[in-house]
Length: 236
Image 1 (cartoon, rainbow, N blue to C red):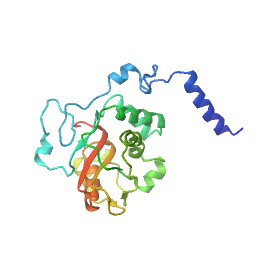
Image 2: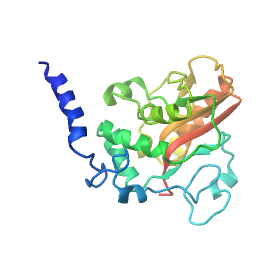
Image 3: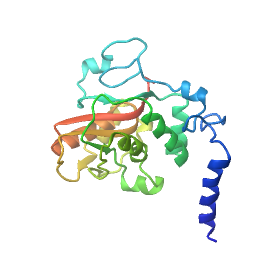
Image 4: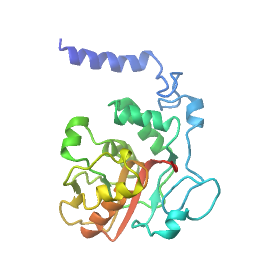
């Protein structure tokens, strides 16, 4: 018998024999999600936030200081979580450790987070450069949003954008350098046949990557472009 087939059979059987374990703390999972009740209750909801860039705020005001000074290119934003425990640990395991189980848990958290402000006609995941895609093996934004797309019946245009030049890792750059790094890095592969789309990323930091994607989608004919991300970092 093929070893890989046997391994898959054992994994499926284990789901029926053993309860799922919490991906964050190791306790017993809960209610169809591989998180325990405590970790589910502790999910860092992004409730007090800037209405234009979803930056977590300490008090409820309409816009953060940066958005009062500089216009954001997107029309609406949906980022249901803050990049904090346990979201940050699961994201690291998924994105850099290749844990698809952690990614599946994050997707289910996104599905359960509540409805977006508006439903677009299509979703466009932020693309990886082909070299980064080869090394990682998957596009984390695409994989995270698949269950969300199924939940709302929205098609995913996985090839609508192309990252036509490699860029430095955004995590190593400051805000100004991030914007410069991704400026002009994305192009549409063909004109869009829909008017309203949402570009999707896993984690939003300054919004530079999403803004560059928004510009490319508008060039391709989109009349309304929203941005979606699972989580938003705070001010460093």
